[in-house]
Amino acid sequence: MTVFEHAEAAIAAPTTRTITTHTAKRPRRVQPAKERGVISVGDRKRRTVRVWLWIIQALTLVGLVFAGLGPLAWSAKAAISDSYAIITDPMGIWFTPNEWGNLIAAWNAGQIGPALGNTVALAVGSTVVTLFVCTTGAYLLSALRPRWGKVLSAAILATLFLPGVISLVPLYLTILNLPVLNVSLINTYWAVWLPAGASAFNVLILKQFFDSIPRELVEAARIDGAGPVRVFATIILPLSRPILGVVALLTIVASWKDFLWPMLVLPDSALQPVSVALPHLAKGSTPFAVQMAAVFLSIIIPIVLFLVFQKQFLRGVGTAGGVKG
Image 1 (cartoon, rainbow, N blue to C red):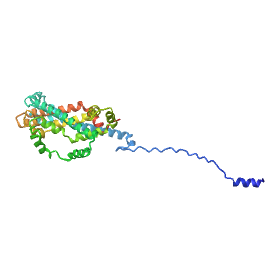
Image 2: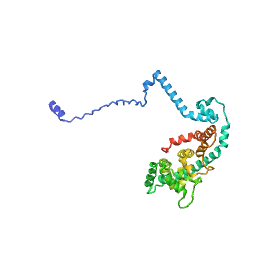
Image 3: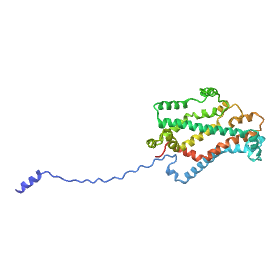
Image 4: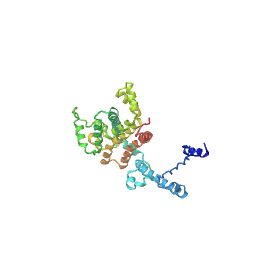
């Protein structure tokens, strides 16, 4: 084979080339973090901006403390001040001598002691009834899930759009002559306890919390032979302690400050709570300082209650949206 034949054969033969391409990895561009504050990060590094920002924060904190604790502090001082000084110079009572006898007079002569006892009984009973009714109702809608559960949930939600004054007259007629039993609950604590338990808001927030509990726990308990009551008592309730504390505290506060309904269903002064007993002091010849002492005694207990259980309350609010599995 001549040289030309070798050349023609080489040209005619297909050639395969292995081409390797090296693609260099380009560095990923890091997106700068979006600034969500009113003042940018760069401005915060400036000394003048930091100083003014600290001053504004300090003034805001002082204003909030004054607005929150100011009325309470003034009420505490007015409770141990003279009636004439409170009326003539309300802001000058800080420099008047203390009269601790006003608290004793409000407790004894003003009958604030028995009224506070009635208030505690109403608050505790309303809390127990509310927890029983709302937890069982929420458990029915969340875990048992009957066929008509969606209709019942919609009906409960619809009641939130109705003003409370609309149901006042029908509720009073029901308490006046309880259906089926045909008895009157007027001048009984049950007239306050039973309506307090029918809270659509509490049922819905408890249902939302129960929905966040993993279904695997409930199914595993059912496989082990646990019935609905045992699942409710051993799984649902222990996992729901934070939200139960929130519901209990809200119920206590609502019962403590309720005025219209206890006044209607508890006409007997010996059964009335402190919210109804306080206006009676203003109608009589009770000194104004004693009235202020009675007001202070009535508001200090809920405040102390919140301060004692504030950690449980805030923890319940934070975990109300779900349970970590």
